[in-house]
Amino acid sequence: MMTLDNVVSGLVVYPQRINSRLMEELPFMATENIIMKLVSLGASRQEAHEEIRVLSHQASDVVKKEGGRNDLIERIKKTKYFEPIWAEVDGMLDAKNFIGRFVLLRISFVRYYLRSCEICFYGSHCSEIIMSSLHRFSLRKYR
Image (cartoon, rainbow, N blue to C red):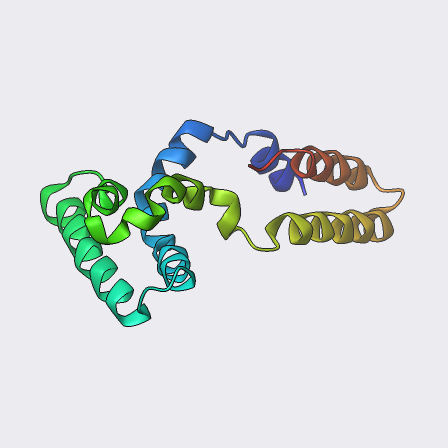
């Protein structure tokens, strides 16, 4: 139980590093939303898929073979085919569009384990350590 406290109390989160890593992959994650937006505006799904596939491979080559940064979004914004959605592309890159039910599940998970710990360790010295550690963890904000 003390190990749990050591891990949780020493946990350090670096939001800028997390954002940097996220932005390496987020453009690839957004490709489906980009295709669906184009289709909703009347584009052919097959054509949209092919256009984005070609640009994705080019951007992926830059990342994997040259060690460069992911420039997929810049490529999309320079390609005439995607002009109908240029103004909306940045909004499609909001990470909150890709977390699904994470916030709800996190809250449920923490509540469940807080309750379990109260029942299992009620009255023991360990219960105080576990409860304080889990409370600290549950109060952290995820963006």
